[in-house]
Amino acid sequence: MHEFEPCTHADIADAIRCAAPEVFSTMLSMDLTGGETTIGPMVPGSHSGIIALLGLTGERSGSGQFSCEPAFGCRIASQMLMAEYQTVDDDVLDAIAEVANMIVGNIKNMLEVKLGPMGLSTPTIVFGGDFDTRIAGNPDRITVKFICGDDIATVQVVIAPKSTRHTPREHHHHHETHMALVG
Image 1 (cartoon, helix red, strand yellow):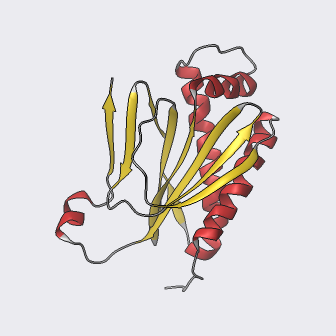
Image 2: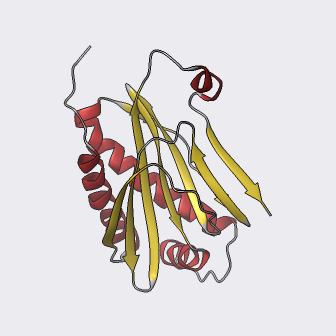
C-alpha cells in the first residue's frame, strides 16, 4: 500500500477555496469570493435552502456539500442553462447538483495527491421546508462561505480516516448520513 502524506484541515480548506471559484468562473462566468472558513463539529441549526451532498470514498471517506439559498440557486441555474428561473424546479435542482458535482470533484482531485484515490457518489439534493443535516459521530467539518454579489453559498467537506474498529454506536451508524426533513 502506498503511503500518502498527511492531509490537514488547511489543505482541505485550500482545495475548497480553489475549486469553488474556479467552477463558478469557468462554468458560470460568475465571480465567487471566499469568505469565512470554519473548522469544527457541526453546530445544529436548520436550513431552508438547497443542499447538494456527495459522498467521498477511498482510503479516507467523507462527504462534500454545496449549499445556497433558493434565489441564488435560481440565479446559478439561469446562468448555467441560459434561461430565466424565478422559482426552484427540477432544472434548478439539477443545475445545483451539477455545480456541486464539479466543485466536490475538483476538491477530490486536488486532495487525492495526499489521500490516494477516492470515489465520488452521485449528488443527492435536499430542498424544501426546514431541515438539518448531520454526519454520524459529528466529525470536524471544513466550511468555507463564498460571496457572489448579494448571494452567499457554502462549501463543506468532511474527510476522516477509515476506521478498522467501531464503537458500539459507530457500528450501527457507520457511513450513514442522517437527515431530518420537516415540512
